[in-house]
Length: 150
Image 1 (cartoon, helix red, strand yellow):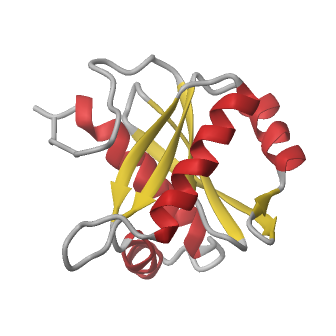
Image 2 (cartoon, rainbow, N blue to C red):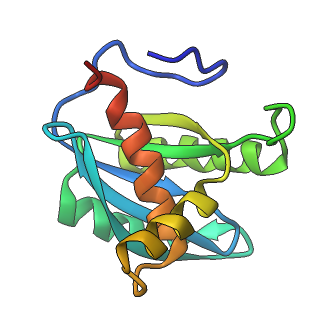
């Protein structure tokens, strides 16, 4: 398991379905995944207005997928790995998400997930998948893969 300073990882995650989020002030990408295969699938985009997430849409996702826990990507600066304003905003989103939905939220550090998502879209030909949703898939799979390594 990696040493991700300032990020909470459980010794063993709850088994089941997870939702992952790539937070943004205008758009929040989401994905769903599960622990059995440690894989995720891009879901779609949730819109934010002035940094305020569409909570009714998030509640609908929760009702539809019944996740055991949630994962939020924390963007750190590329050059030195330090926190930035968006790191704090993503952390605040995750804390509110946990409070509103009553589920554990795990944070995963991420850098360049959008670039990785663009490469995934090119490689797979999934041109209808929004980049933010593919980034959420990458974030969620990063989390899920921590316990399925040989």
